Image (cartoon, rainbow, N blue to C red; front, side, top):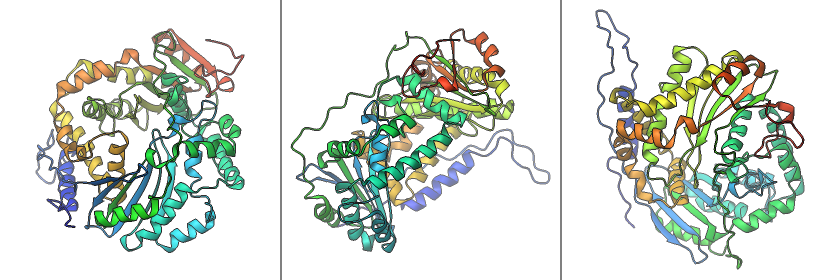
Length: 506
């Protein structure tokens, strides 16, 4: 079968894009040589050049497994990713972290191989194997030389289909996760992120931590893990993406040999209860939540609210708008770090998922400036919705998005992951070839309209974790409805964020 050519070759196209981006992101003033005149603005960049990714080939096996193949002989590697179309959003309410635990245990022993045997077999092939869960999906993948893809795929199929979830492996991973959480919960920035999720989503699916809490991890039993695997790890709820130095014909034959006899259960696939936030769960007002951590060396400040889903028509307007705010040369960092020296870095994120995901803007600062940083985060969001961004500022922020996109496609596993993401959300796989065009099409007016309509500062919540006595009074002058929660009373398992019997607002 003839393979599709890439015009121009992907590596050359990326080199060109990076050269363009370098020109687009030069500092405002050039470092000038002898006699040179300082330049106040960067030189105008050339137009970005699109990259054409080979058209994926698709088949669906008789058991319902969707198989997607991307042929690329510019590499000697093959990457294969088996994606189950559910992740942490299907965790039972009392068992946050269950999907992540289940996926992480896939490589820790099967019916025919122990965890050390899996590791040794993968090492002997010169391959890598990984597994884990995120929001909306659980994944297992192998990356290996094309000449050794068949035995590597056999191991991938084994870990996905036949994990045994041994008690000793569960306990080992549970303790590792509990140790990691113990450290994370003492970090103001990490803790503020956990609190922010509860503030936006309440008790809905996206409200809990993907990795769980100490309480949920302790409650987790082997039967819970096995039950989640039995419900969701099934061929008609999975996508297999194979990319790299392999022909579609050989890839489909390999998929049939390794996954073709994976039986589709007779029971119906569980219906998702949805991951939406608890709209108006707290009286329709924004929440200002302070977690008092008296020994915190810094305050973590987070502005958070609902964002958009991956399939939202405003997706490209959204990511460009966020790029104006985030990144080293984005407005938040310019205002908070560079102009005022209040933080080592400020950033924002528009986290798109199957359902509406969160928007967050954050910075860590010294405790006395916690209220000031909260005001700056809110102010910059409001400014972007009230004033049109200039092309001189917008062009390099688009270049950052294009550069990141190009880097994600440089490797075989990166390309496979990008295709898998589009398959997960039901998007056209060819959207990958129009990414640059769609980013470039966003106008200053689009950014202003999107920010005003979808990221309004008035509907945003504020979370601060730090030594409250150093910033609580100026914060209350800005926001009359501050909730103060002592660290000892914090409960991440509940939308109220308070342990049973704890006091209310203070």
